[in-house]
Length: 387
Ligand SMILES: O=C(O)CCC(=O)C(=O)O
Image 1 (tube, rainbow, N blue to C red):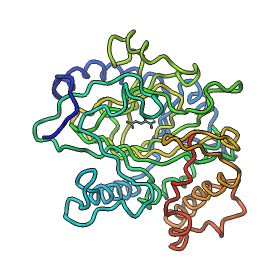
Image 2 (cartoon, rainbow, N blue to C red; image 1 turned 135 degrees about the horizontal axis):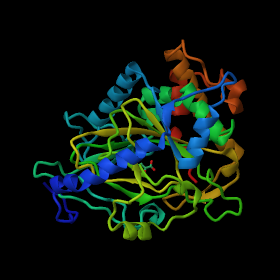
Image 3 (cartoon, helix red, strand yellow; image 1 turned 120 degrees about the vertical axis):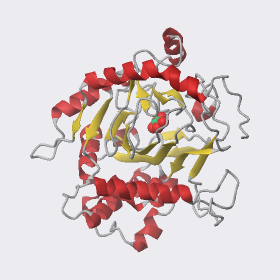
Image 4 (cartoon, helix red, strand yellow; image 1 turned 30 degrees about the vertical axis):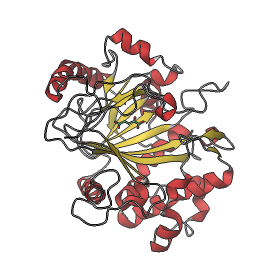
């Protein structure tokens, strides 16, 4: 065991024990909100108003019955394949079976490693200092590996099943209801929280560009869909502070002080079954604890913004580069939505096909085929949009 990060002198078992009461009470609060159910669309294809109202009130909604067993199996198999081909540790050239590892063929390296049960972000200046408070990082068990994979980036060129999920007509109708029919993409990543290993993601609010804008509003930094491939439990899941998407920048250190610990008093866990999907406003105060539980979580994230929050906006990336999102850039990146819709339609032909209005007239150019896999999809995430 080679975990160089100092732990908080709390064992994983003690951490799990510490979480018990909090997770039980939080789960009760989460179910009491009543913001869960299937995606309901009216005859006009528009999202049910009550769902939209609940999303606006709490900042999140839980969609049941989105991914069926077949699609779930395909998503899980793809994630397993990508994980099995990962280098055995950050700089390694080989995967666990001794074959050359996957990853170098993509311009943006797809694997992010972390020390088991660590908090890589809390209390640091990483991610523009957006995670001000360090979480508990329990000592992993003696047989824990030195590293665990916490994130995959570029889901859509890594896994065809994720490209098909991206074109889901119900989810895209939700994106339209929240951001308008000309919604634009953010990025697609997979959060992995292995049992007894998964690191925490310290409390934070996403979005870096519009917080001080005179026309700032609750939707200014878009939302994420979070599709769960395994049950999302109170001990392994993302927690959110309901309603915090409306209040501007939260004072997270004060919230932690007032709660007496990182276990924020009013927060609720995003609990659901495998195959269910959360829509979560990026401005919510949210985070996840070290996964000292026996249960794995794998979450497929895909985010979207309102176009007017992106068009001709210049913003500084996490690596310091300044980028401007002109109409050409938005169009190029949005073609992946059209590609996803076509990929889904080819696989699930009985389903209705979502009409993505900005590219309605470009179905032929954006057909899902091997040529466009190379031409449009490979390294598509170099055009990710980040605000
Ligand atoms: O899945 C997690 O644990 C963290 C997710 C998160 O912070 C995000 O999607 O912004």
